[in-house]
Length: 464
Image (cartoon, rainbow, N blue to C red; front, side):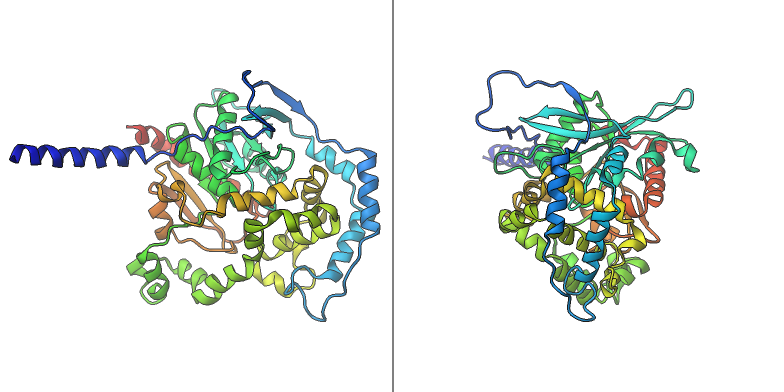
């Protein structure tokens, strides 16, 4: 009888140990997102060159719609407190019609090599930039960079040369990258999924397949916004292939009792919860800097997580409406104090050519509706309910924490999800769109993170 009890207890212990080990990785999500039934024939894995092109008919249609736009007068002294300031929006539209040169911007877009390839039934668009020259004996490290909403692959155009040619920009030359920037399916020039259920794990699986198809069996990944979640999922799917994960946003979706207690007492007992002085400055008073800001900024997410097609229909039909919807986010997510300015501070950190180029990518591809659906696919089952949210990340992780990010996540919180944080830096300035706003700061942080991972060979330790 005693032997039987020991055998049963031993079996239970082994079961839980094995179960825990299995749950440390996330299953690769094999899907079919093309139209109709998946064909019996093998998918064409050809990688095809692609160029951004626009017809005269498309431009004529755009200018007709801009000319016929109906504007509403803003409230006096409303600045950006009611959304985009409509007087400033008129100025943007005037610039769009009379000064913005889309054909010139298309040339800018095409200065880097673009490609498309079919994965899981849909065309995946990506930019692939190799170093212009490599020092003798040095090889380029593949780096996957993933954008978010309402951004695009164009967000990385200012940081790409810093990473592929750091020597020409006064940066550390110890590591040089070849950069792969895909468009999330349903964004930009990647085909939108034709079936329900395409979420961040689906995107991570597609991008993992893309990297393997390009011949990269070991690589780094970097992301913010949805790129944070997609790259996190990629680290959970392929921890032995991902040498390092760098994030400029690291949200925690599973909040436990310790998190809640730190919100209540962290301002007064920061050391008890592992908070730094800068964490306290960014987080408290929590009602104002945490809860109220999230409530003020999450209305769009609720709409997009419930009925994206309804509001998306209007945005896809009106370039002015599309611009208003996107520009407002580039204002207040860059700096919440920009809400107090008539122009939303947009031209303090960006220029209109860059902002309108991003908007034009949404307009000419007609992707706003499918980009918004990504929220529904990821959130509709409830925050904290998905398997990936309950799994930790063991891949060496670097976090660049920008002060004006919509929600600050202290390292003490992030550590519970990302158990191998080797680099966490409070950045001196910058907000949500770090790669476009502060490309040099972000590039420097990526370079030092990769340097640390390579020097200490953290990825080889991870596999032992």
